[in-house]
Amino acid sequence: MSDTPSSPVTRKSSQTEHTLALSDQLIRYTASAEWQTLFDQEKPIAEMFHVAYLAETDDLPTRPITFVFNGGPGAASAYLHMGALGPKRIQFGENGRLPKPPVRLVDNLESWLSFTDLVFIDPIGTGFSRSLPKDKDASDKPGEKPNQEPPKETEFWEVDRDLKSLGEFIQRFLSRHKRWLSPVLIAGESYGGFRVARLARKLQQDFGVGLSGAILISPALEFSLLGGNDYTLTSWATLLPSLAAAAAHHGRARWVGEPGDLSAQTAAAERFARRTLIPFLAIGDHSTPDERHTVYQQLADLIGLPLALIERQAGRVGIEVFARELLRDQQRVVGLYDASITAIDPFPNRTTYQGIDPTLDGLDRLFTGAINSQLRDTLGVETDLSYHLLNLEVFKAWKFDLKGELDLGSIDDLRVGMTLNPYMRVYITHGLFDLVTPYFASNHLADLMKLDPEIRPNLKLTHYQGGHMFYAWDQSRQSWFAEMKSFYRNATAP
Image (tube, rainbow, N blue to C red; front, side):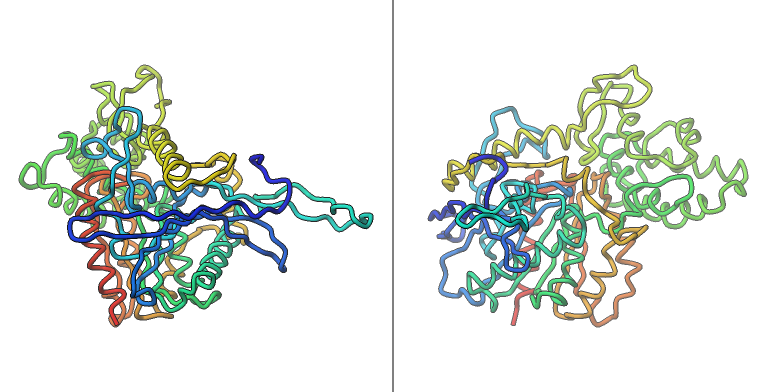
């Protein structure tokens, strides 16, 4: 079997029986690793790989089922699958640090399988999910196979077609497994959080899938907040509290309250971002030298960088500048996805930082080993396909603005989804040290959503120590697990 299928095939699925022993219960479950076919005008066009963990229970109609995916675009679901939610997880080092190879898997005592069935979905081009070749319209001779075009996965690599494929998958899965009466929830990380926000509307409006809950993990919600320039203001402010948290963690910030009180430090950074930094940036050259000095000094104290550097940056400190400069005197850089993690700067004398990010590139060996072991060894998946953990070809080819959207976002869809279904609970969570999708961006957007008082309590935001994958921190994962148990009880209560 080649990496690119030459003809539509039904791949060999796998079903295995397992148990997960927790402190308060023994869960018996079936693990199904399968390819589900996607169709266009009744013709097969792709096969979407997924792993479903379905518990054995007498209360099947009332047991929640959660569809899970990651982001990228181009990331498979292995990160949430093997990092936090599945029955097996990677054993990380202390506070999310990378362990020595080889990767070690352990029973996940915080697996969500204790309160929901789980379906991990790999979008087309990720994991084992692939497009299928299409038959050409040609005058073939009787008895001969039709001419075929090679698969075109790129048609799935744009915003709306991607969401449609996920909606089609969920709809067909519910039908095949007779789960239309189960409470349905969706969970996504990073760009997967963007998917969740848009699907909160689309699943209900276009596919007839009523949602009990939507869980957004380290989400990217409005792309205008993912990077700033000389002419934008808000992204610099929404990034600031994460910079302040990281600086405090490394002992480089001036403490606002008691040393070690991270919550007081981030609260001060949030106030400064809203009340000082945004107005200051907005007035541009109309600020006086004294005003600039005062603001730059306050900013330097909060994020632990030299005043001269803050002045050169004119108060606009990007994530790569911060990652390179915070611990430069130690020849260390901090991670972009988790700024609590440090690594040796391989090129300390070069003008700009040219090393790799230890909190993204360094994780590849862990998750690639973990997911291949889980699928091929534990679940018995037999395939010659390569598992695409993070397919950069997908990311490079992704069409973000197919409809000419200048500022791609998802908050409007989330607002509509919450009003379409005033019973749907929404949970947004981040790691405090994540510089790529900073937590304060979601706080800021939530404050601007103008939700009706009747449904505003349905939206909850909670953040934890750690980075983009804060669940790599044992304490954060355990606290999150306890909160999610409560969230599911409330979201699925009669």
